[in-house]
Image 1 (cartoon, rainbow, N blue to C red):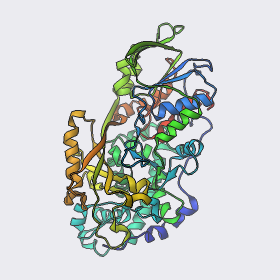
Image 2: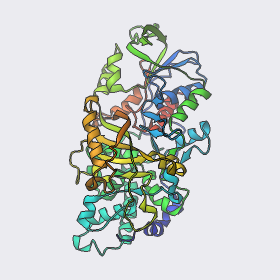
Image 3: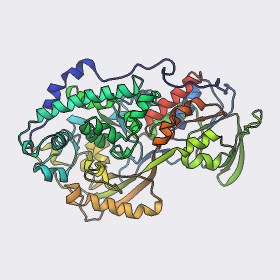
Image 4: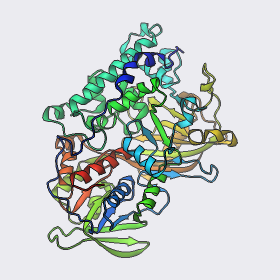
Length: 556
């Protein structure tokens, strides 16, 4: 194994310390290139407002409305009060007591500014931690087993730096130079890639306050965006950054057929530069966790802002009475087995649009039909396993000799190694070593959440096959390198099958649907919020809420 360490990036990236990460100035009004709502906000402080969907977007919107003086807000949620808030699901198991097992929303990247401010306000300044204790902790290194790349190059890579350098050599250098090319050379190339990505990002989307919704591209930029994110980066010789995306943002399938807009949307220059900046400044953290689980944030917002959330409400139909706006919006619901008629003056739809909107709304408009029809999604399966403890990882440093809090399997998300993904495990998170590393020795078993990406959602009937595939992956030395023991056999303690990452198709993007949604907010006494119209991250859905409120003149 060649010596990579942090040195090359630390020395060659010093200039980033001086100028800091790229960031747009937060606009006081909607960004210049964003469409403005065509109508004055049709809600008043005494309006009866119903939010359909109690996930992060719905709870956050209710909180902001409450802060803005709207006191008649009700959130309707189909699920019981079991710790699930949309795709946030913090699970606690009796064997591991206060150890959070995040089955959905989990990490915070360096660019999650709004979520950090919410955590500070509602949970406390110590709400976040680095997995495994960070660089000074016992399990804070990120492992990246790459067996096929290692076999090709005939030396071992374990850490993220080593893997990035090794893969960059494979892409850009002749095989004869692999063994002699210094890592410093690859670090130089990586830094140049970071600057090039910043310039590319700005040329396509301009300067703006990241997350929420990028500005509407001009015709020229829109034409350049008519490719996948992978195709965009390859065309601009940024394959090394695509590799970094496989580590940090792999669950979105950015290496495959995701529209370029969404890759640029989430992989901000700030997020990429934070990786380099973290080598220079220990205070820069590329990835963090919420100490006691994400659901604690939403519960704290509900309690402090006195939000009314009604659980176990199944909606049968919604009639907005668009032909007579003097009439109330009528929601027919089943509440705990009993039929109930709920009336309101304004509807905020935070539930998944593709699966729920046309099924429940009786009077969809032509644009709403186009909006819903332009959505697609991927699938994500998260499984909490109880297993025997792993053996040691055979590396040159004692710190790397133990399983770390986080392990990523990048080859599961690289088309060169996995042309057609079908549930390969791309990451594992040891829950105890991630959140309560100082108690690790107290546990005889290992508790690990495995992540599987699938290009399209899978029915629950496919879960036995995907579970078997996950077990086969994590117990195989060919794929996991340091396999999970098979005796006793890994046991499933909990599992979630997510319809994940809703996003507009390339055709819908060319038709400007994401920005036309913004133009239509409030037109039919309805706002559309959540990941369906933004991005599948808590930072994006909450920032999108702020944008909708600001455009409609609501102070929150």
